[in-house]
Image (tube, rainbow, N blue to C red; front, side, top):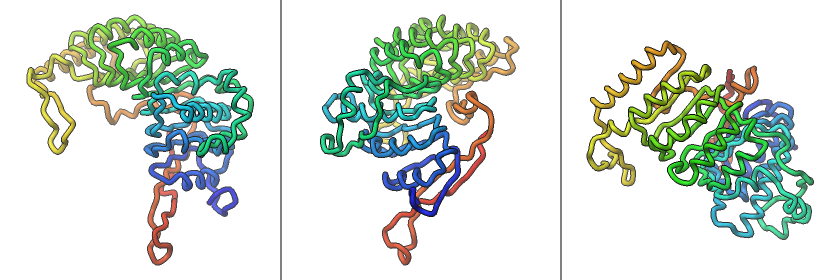
Length: 374
């Protein structure tokens, strides 16, 4: 494998899980650069240092539109000289991907650093050309050109559980990305406090383009949803709304249903178990787990609430609209499903151990699945 090896792979989507850094680089170098439009490197704990090694290899893919880096173990909540340099590297390397339209940084802790990642300022431009590997051991920031920012606005941005602060959402709402966003995932943030108003302002800016909005596990109660409803109703193209894991009552959910029926493209709403359907008992530990607790559910109340919501839905005549409290298995919109047509080949890679007689203790990286994605 690698740029000089005999193996050449043609695929549009490349996904690697739990592969070594060297293995990922080797496979990326084996890909036909004209074909790749998505790279998905999940569960790799790469950190800023690992990303600085891998991202330069992506600049050879002129059609790369989607980059998924969830669970990369990036944590810049406490600024250090090293993290500042790592952020500059990340921003500069993202800026070298001219076709990038989808970015997933889920579960990275980015508090206060979104501007630096999605927008290079002139101070960084002055510093980048002078960076050298000798000055910053472990980081690979050479050959980054003089660029201002990502060269086109993102259309899909997934920032679930990223520890964002109000300044991050304020930047995003004022950036050139906001009016272009079709998919936005801000799950796992506490919108019961100071993030609610920045979120509302951001939704104002995205309302003309937004198709998919995920706000799951965001500690929202009825009053917070009520504050967002006028803005949500202006998201005229919205197709998906995810609210699972929030503390909403049956009454609030029924109100939401009735007030969003006017959204003609809304086809799927994932709602939470209503708070009034829980039993007044302390949480109990999930069997087999030491730290996971669940609140006991009143089955009769849940059935009644579900029936009320189903009846409202039936009375509305919206047979194309689904409301469910099951967050799984609905085939959430993929970026390419609403950005263009066509089919894509996906390359999924895993690592397989060679027989000891052939190569003891050495892992071989092999493609195990090609599939067509509609």
